[in-house]
Image (cartoon, rainbow over all chains, first blue to last red; front, side, top):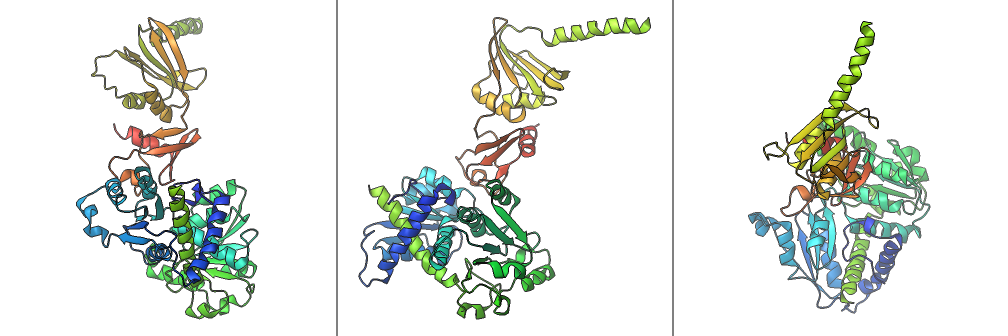
Length: 310
Length: 172
């Protein structure tokens, strides 16, 4: 198994077959994680994590994935205190770091930064978020979670809820999931709808995008509800935020009429859009998502590094 | 009678002005069918200030069979390059380029907007890496030709025609 790309910058760079290859590989990785015998699959290989923006899950899960495969990780503890603070360009930083590592994971505030890094680097680059742009490993772990829980990715009723305008996870996911489904429900408060550009692209591909503000009306039809955090700072006044916050809080009561197989996903961190009481219901998948995040990253590290070896 | 006289004078005036507009040059470039009102922008793209010493003729808002109105530029002693043609295409996608040698048209090219635009305009997205990093050139896919609309190869955002015009004309 291998990928046609040297780097992982965007889901759009992957064919649907390659997405399935990564998901299959991730499923295989569970054996390694569950095994008591440590894996040496990537022994001697070094991952550099270069995070210009804060991250808890993504960075830790990459480091965990590398450790599970017998490799090691290095990172810049505080990018603000590194040469970057002295005005070093991203290209120079990448050209330096590639001398210390076999693969680089980067999160950077500017859109397109990971692609630029991949153009100057000789080692594989993995995009762990470029501003409001792309975050392909998150999308892959979302797809993996859905597939493992639902048993398939096609013909599912999937809704995205919350801040669909600024959330990069939903942008990537909307393109990726509609490779498998013909319809996508979008539930967002006024002003936080999915960007017209994305809706236009999906419609051009013949997909049906159903935009609504009424969650309860469509909830009984859903197989997957993908919830995102609504950021308070996006609203003109705290009162505007409070109005929306009440509408979109998922709790046990709001889940009374849902399908028994409904999966609720969330890229986390959450604030109060999903009540803690939902955690114990069979619908909650957001912590499982985090586990799949490690498996997906193990799969990607293996596919990119083993391809480089051959 | 007066009307007849006027009619008979009109063609002469038109003929005279036409004569002036199409006056032959020995060698250089004639850029015809420029979108009306954009001749000065094309001059800007070509870096022509008038202080180079070349003979430049500009006609603006003249009648055209193909277009309602058009602009024309004639540059003596300079043949414009393919890269310059690509830049002109962004604001005058219908223009034709005539390379003149020895008073004759040596080569006639109708502009076509290329598939990729590199380094001519900036990405409209201020958070795009191309607007924040040294040593990187903007790089766009052309997603629409009439009017020209670009998608950044890095951040994938759209830079629209209005913004392209604003960037090119904003330099005045």
